[in-house]
Length: 395
Image 1 (cartoon, rainbow, N blue to C red):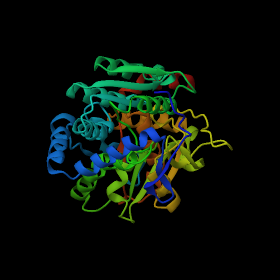
Image 2 (image 1 turned 180 degrees about the horizontal axis):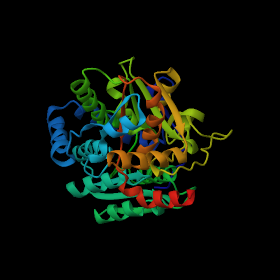
Image 3 (image 1 turned 60 degrees about the vertical axis):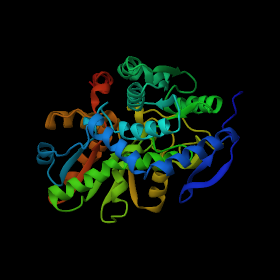
Image 4 (image 1 turned 120 degrees about the vertical axis):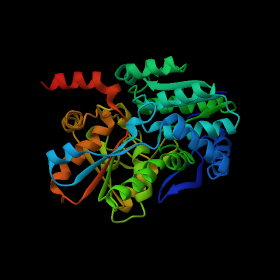
């Protein structure tokens, strides 16, 4: 089949969060995504499916992970208590595995054997390659050429797990370009391929499905903070790229209006704070775009946040005022990266360090009985070489 330009779209009245979301897709993908939606709706509440998912979450991923009181960091800063939701302790080192296990079990139910995925920082690619190895499925990972350089260790990990990693040289060679390539693959090979999308973006049903599987983060943290403090947090903070760890961190608190929900973006890829409504990768969201609606180039020190759009649910939370979104600078991120390592012995992913950076700024301005939960979406092993180079340039 010849490639079909993604601009040939068909809008569906499904999967909207306010004015954002939907499904703007080539005709070839309509039936594919409808089948995915049907399978998701069929199995997400199925007792046997839930039992299998829970088994892998406990026995393979290692959940539930702790909600750790950052005692030394809190003492050094003064003000609010800071708790860390430890997604960095999951098998594969990040929150991505929560969604991957859910989707790979769906793929198995649907009879798929060829799995494709996109990745920026490499954590979703590693998680997908891991699950494919476990279940004996073919795994193809698209990754921007620039990101393969920045995340060389994760490329090797994916290949070690048996995945084929395809560098994407078009555009900037970053996450947006990897998503483009994966979507084109799906258009050409939809009859035998399952696209395991890693973030809360894309056409319906992906944002809803990713939210569902990542909501385990806040289901645990809500129960844990009530056990530890007897009350809900004042604020929940998470970094935002596509938005999966943040929507998972926010999910159980969205209806709790007294809890502030705060998403943190890099200054260089601030879709929520600087974006305007537009369509990217088959869905409507706030995105960074030119006057013709073309995505603008982005660059962040964290490959996982280097995306010109954002999940449609985050776009709605922003416009409706339910959640707040701010940016932090590269220097603030690098400071937070080091500060958490030196006070708590936890090296966060550069993505997660964005959330840490904001928390360290606002905690001293808050009361001592206030509580901040920071989602540590991943560990920083993958980033130490890049961070070392960046810190050397600062000297």
